[in-house]
Image (cartoon, rainbow, N blue to C red):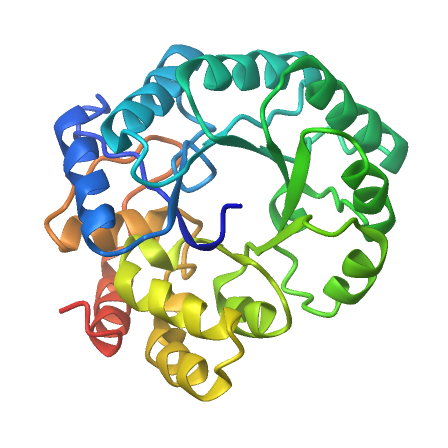
Length: 291
């Protein structure tokens, strides 16, 4: 049962675009020390869209080896090609990942039946726990609750990362999904309320920058301590917003670099954070006591 504050980990890069393996190792140790509950390797925040397949698999393998079973590792293995998603999921399983996170197929805009068959095919092809990932703001593809309910009956499909920010979707989802099916927020701004409402955790961008505070806030929300959770979430509120002032992961990579944890590298077509926005992101970091 993977629960709590799960960081959608950035992928460190040198400014020449080469992956920085030493910084990746150090970043993992940083999160272990800061009580992050689990790691997603090579999700959206990890620049999955600009890593080639070999790099993708190498990052997953490196994270699994470095974590060495101390916390769960979830591999991002989604694609808009069902066969590619199967291949990536199979390689993540071979590398020893604890679960896989599969974003809805982007760009080709499948029907709900197409989504059902896509995920069912992956689950039947690879014996590893799989988490659905719905983020229509990026994919232009909304995995509707009724389709999630159908998929929740498929062996290997254990949960959903719901990034619409619509907390009330949990009502329909919980009513239709079996006991033990896991619900993760994919929207930092509403994650506190999501977990107070019965969610099992968050897969978080903010946790890259303020991991201990996110972990403590989510833990409080999951046990229903609204006062404590909302107080801590208030400290994080500006960060939740400003880390999306330009497309993710532009602001968060700048922030983690500003913390001295990674180089400044980011791959085109993404660019470095606009200089005029640095002050805004820095002030959000200060409000969360990162500095």
